[in-house]
Amino acid sequence: MRARRCRACGARLGAALAGLSPLCTSSQPDAVKLHRVFLLPEAQGRGIGTRLVEEVLAASRATRRPVRLRVLRVNPARRLYERLGFKVTGETETHFEMERPA
Image (cartoon, rainbow, N blue to C red; front, side, top):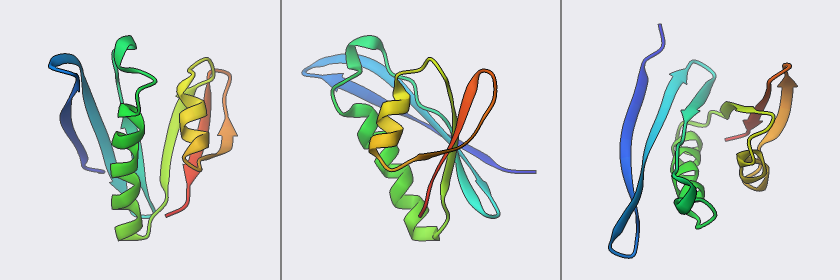
């Protein structure tokens, strides 16, 4: 069984709380799996998601394991993942499976 770790990160825009981003990952023997990153619409496009994913990437480099994720085909976050070096490794009717080397 794989242990799933989640932590919540508050996202602020100025003094106001723009959203809460639960960041969930699980460790697999050969990879780190990124399960969830949620941002409110007003927090999107401001670099907050990038910083959260970069934290996971740093942990993956430290353990020398790639990061894997699934993203809905219609989710614009796919562009974020591609910009951060993720490549599509598979697909279903609804999702793209992506991976970024450590």
